[in-house]
Length: 514
Image 1 (cartoon, rainbow, N blue to C red):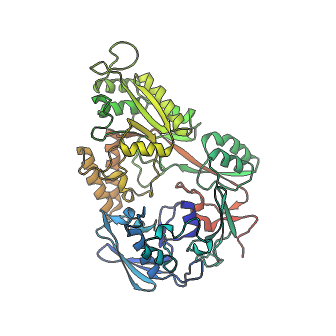
Image 2 (image 1 turned 135 degrees about the horizontal axis):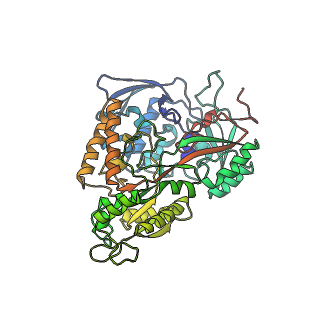
Image 3 (image 1 turned 180 degrees about the horizontal axis):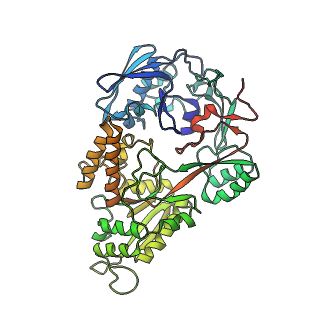
């Protein structure tokens, strides 16, 4: 659970989720050697874990050892590599360490932003014994769970709540010298359903939603409360991680469909034939914007405004469908291929979610184009299992990127990536355009010049906008709400929108002055 990690742990460096700039955190700073791949970091003096044990470079080395240990199977192992090669980390002294990248990598130390620094004195014995996965389990005494973050976990009631109190040894202070965090306690209520969470916020029973922004259907009620001075609403911007309609382009994928299903003209026709503004108006109630590719305007550094787009052009869509070999051969309103087989495919999507409502709008709009669509609602785990097996035609879903910088999400962009959604884990690029994207992404990942990187990635977006292995329709507008008790919130587009900087949150009931 990311919220628990953000509250209780800390990292060497941090990406400020508002400015998108890399900041010193446990490390007070760093120097880059002339080779461009060796970084020397200096830890802040006097930092202690929440149990009072001093932080040293050995804890950092231990944290990397945990991440790379194959027996641990850490999800961070892949993200702490460059082109499949691990980093070389060594300690110079108790406060100084060097991190050497195996080859030039443009994001530099952003690569390690997700690695929490763990307490060697608490966890090394478990790692050596091969029991690391069980070291911090629900049965572990909470006093043994220590970290460098602003809070410590003091209560866990399964299915109900998590309670955190301030870490008395937390290393940060504000500009006036007061020790952070401002809050003495944070209680995270475990609410299984977003509707219930919104109702509790509306009633003032909670002060903010830990992970979610407001749903479109909540805006009217919350806006009224805001106008009454009972809540505070903040419009943050356009979401970073939009949902997409992705097609099964694996070798042998969707065998029951005709050759038309794999033609890019078919995908282009669907993109051109859908009225995105209608989705914005009817499903999102205006709280979204039309988009045409995987990078939204919210990601200002990497968004390419000139990527291909097609705005609800029914005539162009019909021409593209004909180019894919689909025409209405018997006059029944549904297109058929040359063998007379109707143009029909299924879409897996998340049942009971906004995604299912979008899929229903897509179904109707595609019906008007002459393409029949069957909606298959599943839970997210069911969708993932079908995707892993390649047992689907298309999926309308979404992924949360770990970073705004595409170089830090190679699993999605590179053809060999396990989350190259439409055709993952390719041993070699299946198509010339994917090979070109691989080349461009290598340039985007290694060039030391930001403009060169932006040009390379803009071309990636143009290729994807033409080939359309996944079609993007809308991106929501992120709006967060809090009670008036919350002070010092800095909402960000990335999830969690507010608790990413929990150490600076304050409350009227607990003023920051100390």
